[in-house]
Image (cartoon, rainbow, N blue to C red):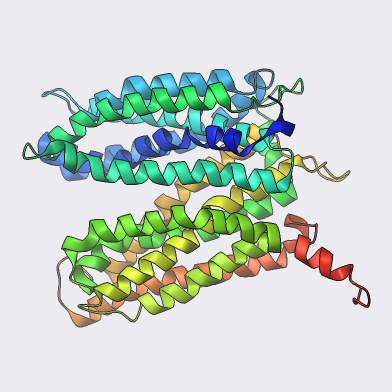
Length: 441
């Protein structure tokens, strides 16, 4: 099957692998810290230090994996690196989630590095494949939306299954059983994607040196898009770092936290076809701006909530999840469009692997920067979890809702200022309007 034959069935087949990859990522951030502190009795501060060190190693390796995909995967469409990453993930994740009784900090660090390395190898090669396989801007949006839609299903499954699998045996038992679900999902999805999705076209132009990594950052348009993505990503990550505190101490509805998160991710998944349609009608950049604008309005409302406003917050989860769909589907599609455009005489175009390596690096840096910004700011403003001081609770609401608004507005301003560079072609609707008789040039 060639890229020209990218049917809806082929688009679905490509997206399927996003499910187990997202399924594997969620326990790293949500379940592992609690597992190793409560079940194995490791010191909380030491576990936090190991997580930070492993995250630093992980972030630094992402650009190198992108370079390796360009250097060694060009002729095979990156399938070797993708398969290697999947194999490493399949071997290491079960060991991380079911540690032996004597496992300590060294075990935790080694397994975190291995799981993260496998995940990054697979996800970067997978993203490069998706950018290369779609021949038109509309198909690139569909390909990314398929991947992110399956990924959101994976997130929901990974969030819900540990409790279901544990029964009365406790969270550690549920996590130890999780690989028995993950491995069949990984094998099935990999067979679906690798068997039925079109291959990425082979390329003979491999990046032969590590110089392709700094060279990618000299691509002005890529750097502009990466900058918008970073600012917007931090804006989205601040609520992620503070949402459980907000639900517990502003709404005082801790028992509903899981339901709120499920509604949020489900709304994001359901919104993806609508964002694909909006991108086709308005253009991707303007559709992304609309998603950011919706998020600004929603978080302005969230900052006004208080004790007992659970129904209102449930609606906010629906609307903010809808806005999240734009953040998931449209920026990677814009990046794929950018990489497909010919370079200008003055600027070289970033190599695909290097570009997605930096993209993954920024994605992970956003999470770290958001936590590093929001949590110390909350402490500075006098908030502590479980406290009931009105001033501290108001500070929590402000950090949760209003800091993201400021960052979102900054990202919107940058995106609009650079709109001609990041999406130079007019939207189909605009182009059709301009062609009407009597239309002003």
